Image 1 (tube, rainbow, N blue to C red):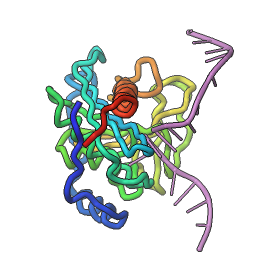
Image 2: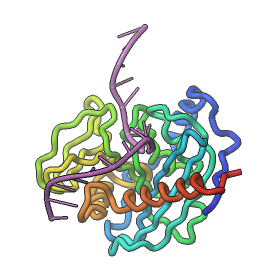
Image 3: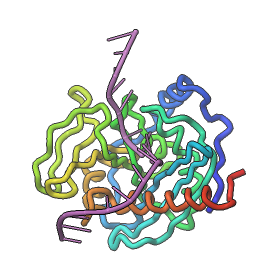
Image 4: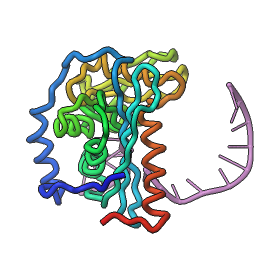
Length: 235
DNA sequence: GCGACAG
DNA sequence: ATCTTGTCGC
C-alpha cells in the first residue's frame, strides 16, 4: 500500500476544474492502433470512499490479457480531494489512482477505468484525463449511460449500438452477456473505439463487467476497510 | 428556472 | 459511491 498525494495545483472549485478539462482535452490522442486484445497486460483501476472519515482507497490490478490471471496488484489510500460532481469525477478519483499506478512494479499496459472517456459532457471523462496525465493507453467502461442516448443492442453477447450525444457517436452500448444490460464503452487515450470494445469483450468471458474492474473493485473495498476499520489512518 | 446526472 | 438480509440459481 502507498499514500496518495493530492497535486499542489489541484482545483478547488468547479470552475477551475472545468478550465483544466478544457485545457487538457486537446492532448487526447484518438484512434491510435494498438496491440490486439489478449496480448500483454491489462490493468483495472477503481476507488472506494468513506466520506464520513474523508478517506479514499484506490486499487490497480494488472492482469495477463491472455489468461486473465493476476500479475500484480497494489492499493493506495489518501484523503478525498474533490466532491462528487457529475462531469468532474476525475478530480475525485485520479490522485489516489495515480499514486497506485506509480507504485506498480510492472507496466500496466491498457488501463480500464470505471467510468467514461470521450463519452463525457465536455468529451474529457475520467479515462481521457488519466490517459493524458500518464501517457498510458486507457478506455472507460461504465455501468450507466449517464446523459447519453442509445438504442437497445440485440440480445447476443457482442452486439452493440452507438452511444450518442445528438448525432455524434461518443461510445457504444456493448452487450457483454446475452440478454443482460449492456456496459457503456468509450475511448480514453491512444485507443480506437473498435479496440476498446474488443478488449472489453476479451475481459468479460463470464460476467457483465470486465475482470479488471471486478478485481480492482474488490481490492479497493478491502483496502478501504483496512484503512478505516483498524487503527491505520492516512497522514 | 428545474431536474438529471459516470462513481 | 454507500446504506443493507436473505435468497434464488448456476
